[in-house]
Image 1 (tube, rainbow, N blue to C red):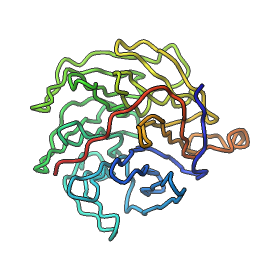
Image 2: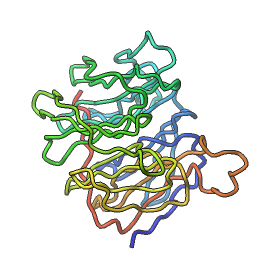
Image 3: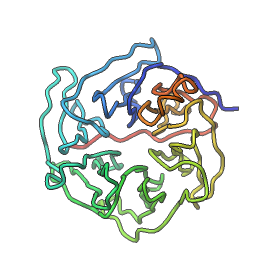
Image 4: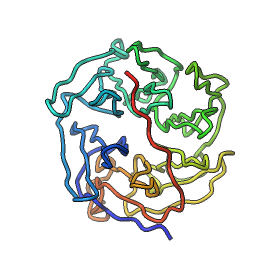
Length: 290
């Protein structure tokens, strides 16, 4: 039986982007709206936070140290020791309302990140930042980018548009970093909730947060719902594997979508959760090659 534990009872406005650092054995995540990057050390329980100059949708670790983040204005290097933020590539400067959102590295160290439009207009893109710091738009016409993950064999890339209630699958070429043949993988039209952030386990099952549905879901490689794990909050945003053996799930959420009159029913909204006993193992998150 899966056991859900609130490991940090914070009050994130919009907790997102949890990522396990295998070298440090620490969990990092962001609060997009604060905005800040945070970390949690499960060995001692310490929590740290670094304020950011603008909204931060996601981030990944760099091979040479520090992180590269998807900020409102674009990609940027962030040195957590000094607090220095160095812009790398501007994204969607012609669209002042959009910002970068969900993002992850593929297993060749390229950082993929999609954008989000608060007005829910289909003008957002999916971008790839390469090790040489060149940035390329890989696809477009989205409203709310989320759910980026790759199959264990690197042949399939997953990407969701939460507003359209659809997770897409692409054919993926790990060597070139090209995507092709976008098709429907999962839809949430017939269930409560929408698919937000996601990850893939070592067996190729797709784990995701059902925001507005109050649960974590596991889908098989064919897109069939295999099981769900209920949470004590209604708005989970993303899950990732962590722990020494990558056998537990960390889950972020937020207070942003909780109506004030219902806040008393969700006292743990905004907390960081760990789910034990999921009977699955994750795949280490790659570091950015640049």
